[in-house]
Every structure is written in structure tokens, then in C-alpha cells.
Image (cartoon, rainbow, N blue to C red; front, side, top):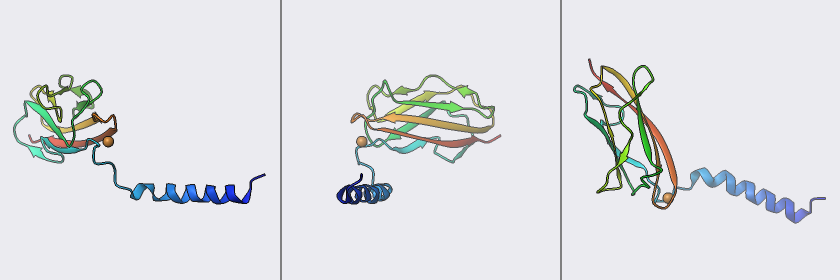
Length: 125
Ligand SMILES: [Cu+2]
């Protein structure tokens, strides 16, 4: 049998859960600040590498970025967190053909919080 106080507590949990999406994420999470090529941009020359700048230092072993080409296949070398600045991730790229490229990143900040995201950029013909 559910007591009256349990019912009220349950209702309280639901009320808090409903508000959670409104709570801003902790500032220490690593979010993508900017990228080269920029998200949504069109570039006219093939970039030698993708560079992602995050708001926090990353755990190099757990933070990755991948680039998928117009055909969907993975392009470029394994991503590397910059040895001198752990807020930066590099992906060396081969010469890119014209088309749309999708970047998918997975970041684990030094406080162990996980963030993910993706964006596209386009290489003009
Ligand atoms: Cu965090």
C-alpha cells in the first residue's frame, strides 16, 4: 500500500524531473566553441585538417572526432587532442573532393562529463 506521504514525494520527484531540461548545464562541460572549417560553412579550398576548439580541457583517451565524406565513409586520420592545448582536437584530412562532410565529435572533459555533437561543412566544387 502506498502511503499518502510517499505519493506526495513521488509527485515531488516528477515535478523536479519536469524542470530538469530548464537547468543550464554545468559550466565545466566541454562544449564546441568553434571549428575550422566552421559548422555550416562552405569552403573553397580543401582544408588540410579539421580543428575543433572546446570550452574545457579534454581527456585525450576518451575524446574523439570523426569526419564522414559525401559517400558516408570515414575520412581522415584518427583524431588527436592537441599535446600543448587539451581544448583542441585535430583530424588530419586528405585532399577533399567537393561535397558535404559531416563531423561527429564526442568529448569527455577533465571533470569526466560527456558531451556529443555533430555538424556539417561543404567543400565547394
Ligand atoms: Cu562538466
